[in-house]
Image 1 (cartoon, rainbow, N blue to C red):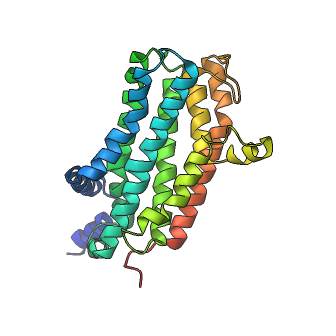
Image 2 (image 1 turned 90 degrees about the vertical axis):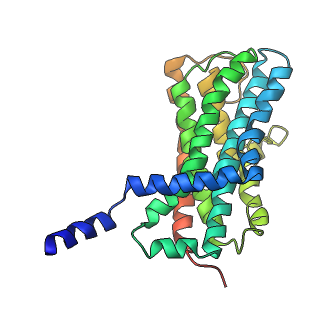
Length: 267
């Protein structure tokens, strides 16, 4: 009689991909039913590429800016803001508390929240390749690194969302509490006109690291250069610094999220 109990407990305590996918499917259905959230998640990130189609064909600077903007918007909306809003809403409705009293593990809940946005983000990164080529841009020099950068960005901004949720009182407050992370993300793309000493700091932001990864992996552009000079092998070495910056942000945001995680409504 004890063997089934032991097996059941082992199944309960372990991470279940099946349960996670079922929860993720439920989260995806809720996202699809929210037209505003779906518009922000899918349409807004594609707009820079649509503008690129209407602009000068093959211009490297415009192409790099449009692709970077698409990847950043894909990380911010379907991942960061969507995970933040869903976590806070379901925490306040006691959905997370009820799920945790059953067989669902904490890791399953978190991964299931992130998965729909992650799939959208990686899908947008893949769709950006043919759309940019239609606009006259070259194919990515290192597509593996480009998609890897998108995947790492998902991890970074998912961790930011869970950290921000820890000090977000309700879903309405998320519009304000999300602003520091959004500013941190876009600061790297808006630092061109800043003094050199300020740019050295903005280069350490996740947005700047994502921009450097796109410029390196897609166009073979070294940091701060507008001339293509990197071959496929050289892109791996040039990408080391931005990858380390993103990894550091992922570790920091994950540590902060673990310290501030709240599964029940704030009082």
